[in-house]
Structure formats: C-alpha cells, structure tokens
Length: 105
Image (cartoon, rainbow, N blue to C red; front, side, top):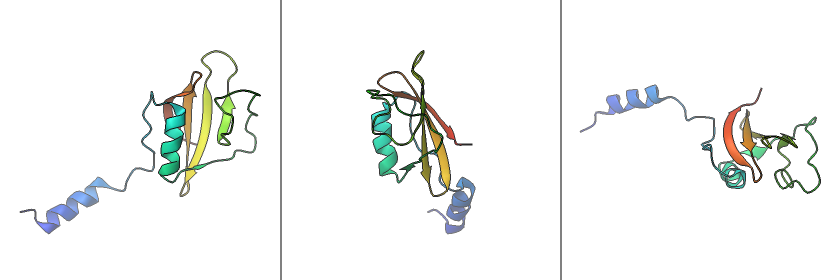
C-alpha cells in the first residue's frame, strides 16, 4: 500500500510539468508543427522576421518563421508561444527536419 504522505512528497519533488514541448530531433517540421498546435502552442509572430522566399516550402504558410537560410544546410528558425513561454524550433534541410528546440531569448 502506498502511503499518501509518501505519494505527496514524490509529487512535490517531481516539480511542475516541463514548459518545453516534446519535439524530438529528426521529426519532420510539418509533423512537429501539428503536435505543437495540438499541445496548445501558438505561432509567435516576430515583427523583424525574414520574409519567406517565393516558393520556399519550408516557410510558406508558416507565420512563425523567424529566418530561413537560402544556402548551406537550409537551416530555419521558428518561434512559438504558450502561457507566457516562448521557444524556438530549429530545423535543417528541405523538407525541414527538426534539429532541436530552445527557449526564445
């Protein structure tokens, strides 16, 4: 039998749920985007974001795009927000594949 006070201590030590989304590196950005929307994240519109180039499928229709490189590894940066927390999702390639996430500064 689990004693209630032991269970309570365990819950207190566990702390709050992570504010960061569970987006695994290697996930296609289209799939990660759907997951973020389902989890209650909203695209963050950054006023000084780059413009999406004509015909660039990595950022077309994705208002959360902050920047996408036109050369090299085809890196992009996408900004998201939920309940006062802001994050960035970093991708590479075309089609875009998630390489990581980080808190937005």
